[in-house]
Length: 427
Image (cartoon, rainbow, N blue to C red):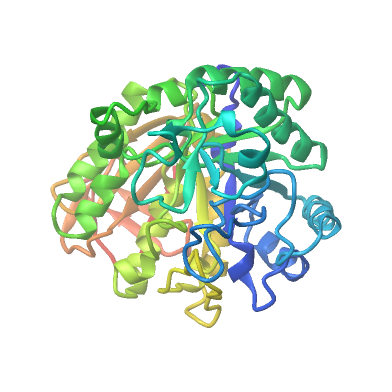
């Protein structure tokens, strides 16, 4: 991991936005009108899916994927103008938040400006432009081994957007980019913009193995942390999915969470999230069960690392907006905005950023973990399986208060009764 990464980043709350589908208008100006509401959630960073023009050749759907990029230096005019984007950045800063852009440096569209101007920058097979991953048939891959001028070009892209006030970059499928390039990128970018935040979308371990078996280079999570400040939680995600799909145990998921304490640098920062634009809405995964949604949200905010929600999650939207069509977020669902705001206040602080962290194994589908810093302790008990019975807790007998709703929690014989509400106790 980046040695100079601050543990303070563990206290970040990130809000992911797909501008096209955030509002009926689908523009920067319409999003700007929503900034004050987003700020009230407690958000620190607004992260935008790619905002560049979308390729037309081999386009998926009518409007195309924002990850099929035609020009790194310009704005998709359906979202607005460059001046509109600058205004969004300025107003985001005025609201006390930062703005992060999605960067797609593994590939471009088949009709990109770059492929026309520098065809030598691209991967070819049998003399034809193509990609290494078959399902991504609307894009063609860059080839970092052919021409180092490509490296300079892409680094300059980052510097350009940073010069406009962009505070961070989320790198799409960062595991597929060469480590040497990423290291050079980081040195050059941070030299010019030392406070820029670098977030990696690392890939699932199984996908990494698959690519390597196809002789396609893929960075491991440990390599990712040599460059990036934060990384996606995709190393534990298969165990999360397995539990929700009744193919694995919650205990195994907790074991994988705790394993991160052993295999990553001491200042590692994970990005915890229940959903994003790729893998679906959590409300749908649990059939709209509000009790389970609240338990898992509390666990997500409490878990060690930064937290991200995807726009609409605060209203328990069950529908994942299409990447390829106009498909607006449903803002009419069950509103958990106040609950999310409260969780953010309770769990984003020096104690959770710098404290010793432990997860205690349970025989039930219950998470029991705590942070300890000096004399302060924060304990989280999240009954994700809505189990019944008692569990042992690391507390002396007595009455405590649930910091989430101020209800009394009684400890007797160092045990508590399991309830349907998530519990956070400060001791």
